Length: 149
Image (cartoon, rainbow, N blue to C red; front, side):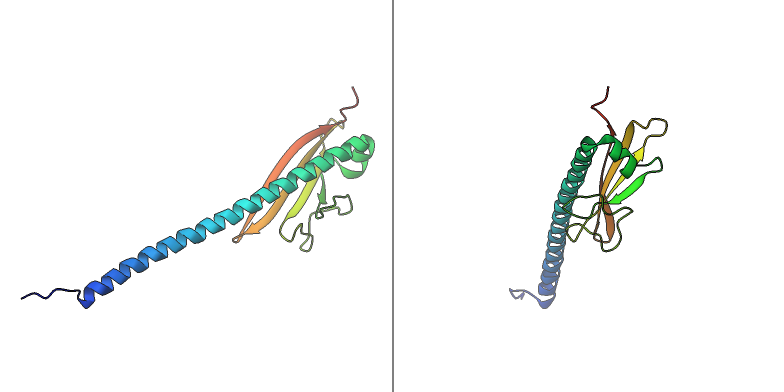
């Protein structure tokens, strides 16, 4: 005669299956939260990069000659733009303490185009660390003195 009910072995198997399912669900949830955080930081970095590029364009419009002479070179001048209040006060790559919003390093490289000093090539890069990896948002453009014919 067979008794009705669950054996201890069946209960252990059921608990193991539930544990594996819960582990998978928690892993997916953790990964989704991490991806959401990365996406949010990428959005902030994109905004910081665009802000710096617009500021550099405005600086170009103030005085083209000063812009080229003081802030660009044929070998490429690197500037750390580590502040919300952008300025030309931090020449060189960003160091360890030069971080924007406790997360990002933002640098601009201004290079006078070889053979054509009427063009300055600008690259702005915003970098941050996320889950042990260095991520970046980069944009570049070529600026000219649009007021001259």
